Image (tube, rainbow, N blue to C red; front, side):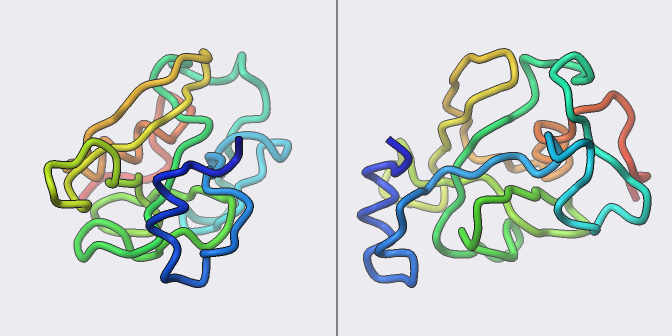
Length: 146
């Protein structure tokens, strides 16, 4: 149940071919508010309680990543169980693109579980700022957009 059958087929020619999971957790949630990655800067904290999430129906808890990178979209493939989505000025992880494709695995969508418990299919996020907002649990952004 922790391995998407679609991911399993895509990962067969990568170092993730024997992985036991393909789902990742939003690194801005949990850990007592500590954030796994420091790309947002010193002393930036996430949230540790559901009640601290600004819009529970618009914040991702679990999602999927591609086992490959896409230039201009993601700088890292699936490489751990932490999902640290970046923005247009700092690409890090980004949402998978391999579900419901029209023949181009870079243009599909991703399954997500949101804080309020609903599941959705998200088409590829073209606006990387919006992609970050889907992962960031607080009202105000921890950085200023260029």
